[in-house]
Length: 148
Image 1 (tube, rainbow, N blue to C red):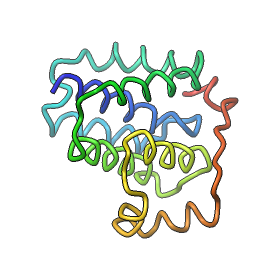
Image 2 (cartoon, helix red, strand yellow):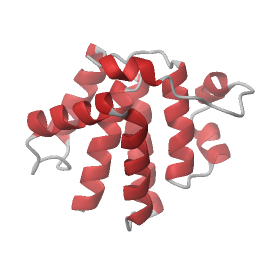
Image 3 (cartoon, one colour):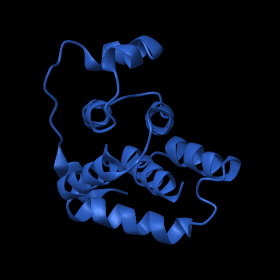
Image 4 (cartoon, rainbow, N blue to C red):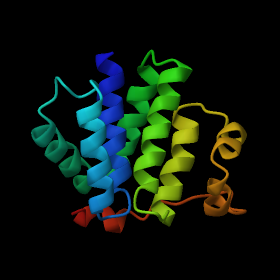
């Protein structure tokens, strides 16, 4: 369970920071989620939050690569992977807009978590508009160096 909690925490922070600015709505969702669930009860949230943000600012691509390796090396089953995706999506949706870096992250999560994209697009039909006809997605790392 600790492995799941750690991956969930990192991906939640990444999903808030991916567009370069942590919106108040995203922070509100994260705080409520943290209070309502046991997942982060063993974390020093403020300290770990700052550590993850600094890692993202320093080298976002390495952070995502490291997170990908952590997920691939984990024993997380599909249910846990779907929970993480649902939390990521809820955070991204909390400010009522999805920008290009958030689309990149969602697409990356399909791959990292080995999730059925078509199934999730039918579960979240509004994502069809965000993805459009795109088949390739790029991360704008410039905005991540100044996350605030």
